[in-house]
Length: 59
Image (cartoon, rainbow, N blue to C red; front, side, top):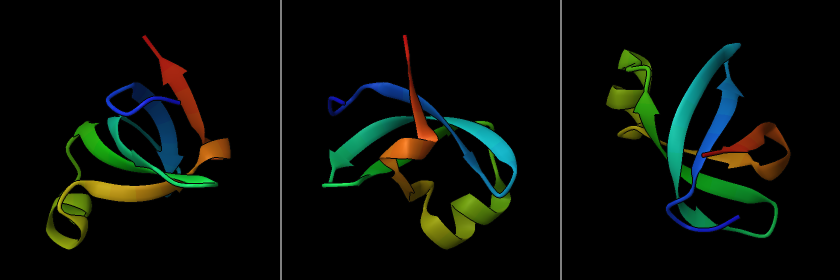
């Protein structure tokens, strides 16, 4: 997957959309774009590391 590509992923049983900031061997650092989640914003500054297997590339 490419940096700046848009992906969809599930985190804590909720689906989010975001943009890839960095790619690691088995995971991606994602800047979460929508929907807004207060916990993500406060604890993680809208950025999470997610397994590549949990992500789906979207257009």
